[in-house]
Length: 122
Ligand code: FES
Image (cartoon, rainbow, N blue to C red; front, side):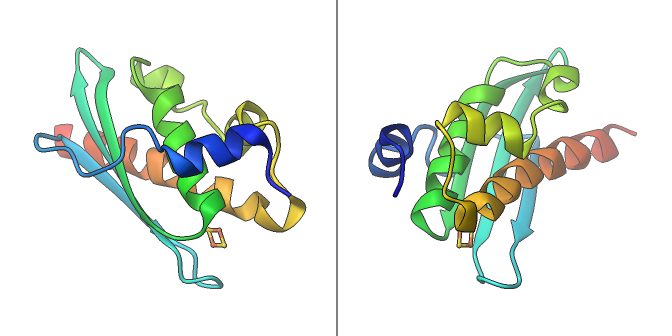
């Protein structure tokens, strides 16, 4: 039911784990399934130079977390703000309809991390 790309990211996730040095963190949870995701970012010159994640969740949640970190790494904060669940799902070759909400979690965790960073800067 999962695309090959989803399986790849689930089995060998990229950027897995909390960063030792990070500037901000985004935490989101899905009340209906109970899954939780953390995205850590390190920012330099308004760009995401390093990113890591911790996810306690389903296979799709792990694959979407991995993919969102891949897409966001190296992007400016302005570019990263444009990353949505659709961006993630498309890059993964689609998700089963029942698992679409998992990509929401990944996109939201990234956006929360950016918000957290910007709120600290003020
Ligand atoms: Fe909850 Fe996938 S089932 S994030």
